[in-house]
Image 1 (tube, rainbow, N blue to C red):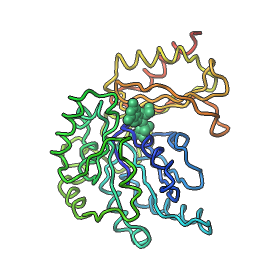
Image 2 (image 1 turned 180 degrees about the horizontal axis):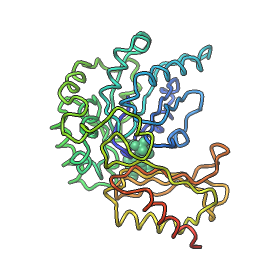
Image 3 (image 1 turned 90 degrees about the horizontal axis):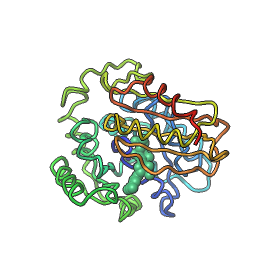
Image 4 (image 1 turned 90 degrees about the vertical axis):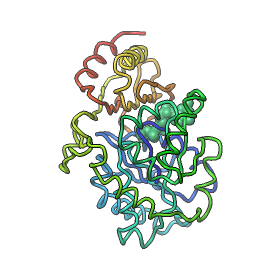
Length: 336
Ligand SMILES: Nc1nc2c(ncn2[C@@H]2O[C@H](COP(=O)(O)OP(=O)(O)OP(=O)(O)O)[C@@H](O)[C@H]2O)c(=O)[nH]1
């Protein structure tokens, strides 16, 4: 299982790992939070080896969905020459990992065929301390991992990384700590891994039962309102997608993103999008924002499918869709 807070670098790490020959026999199950999943377009993995879970929060819809995802994988890969050796489950950045671990270990159909090998959590060295302070899910993710992968150390100061390491040691003294990009593949590539103490994860869950540890998850209903703007992650987290049918001005969008980051940076928990822009016809632009940090944009070689609309997913704290949509309307029309 690969977990880690929103934008902490899970997909980036996974792309790097899956490029290794040792991990060729790996399938991926991706769960995304929000109305529109984009990660399956951003992961350089063939579609047959990948299952995208339905929208929603993996931690409350997990049991049925995850079992079905394994079934779908098995059906899709049945009869293939190379047997499947490994499945990576990439959780949403807002997932509580404990119910996923429970399902993996206790659901007979899954437990019969698969053994839980590793729980890795990515932690972003730029935003990590703030995120651990403000987001209970991030603490849980770090607490249950046996491997903590520190990402974005290239963007963080040595002092920031040091403070984060100290904090992570306190949350999870038993975990192995590695820096992304240095030696991040070897642990996963090892055929049988090292023996893992799964009881520690279960203890971690007992210690921080779903929703009661620090209060603000306690409001969760188990309704399905989280498929819409209001999510089960308390009343303050919003998830929505802003779409445009016609190409937008890239120069305008860049100014708009800079404005949003300046005014509401810390509350933009995650922004990611595929954009159809006037300046680069035929080449989708990919954008990534994580709190106040906007990463350099990139380009996809081609549109992944027939849908060529601009789609930008927002997961925010108290930043309403109308504000985002209305301000984009102002900037998108400006010509470069
Ligand atoms: N400089 C730098 N950027 C990174 C690093 N890891 C990830 N990023 C960037 O951070 C942004 C988010 O990375 P993702 O891999 O999409 O993060 P994620 O955890 O999969 O995001 P969600 O699935 O939305 O929670 C992208 O723009 C990445 O290029 C890193 O080690 N260094």
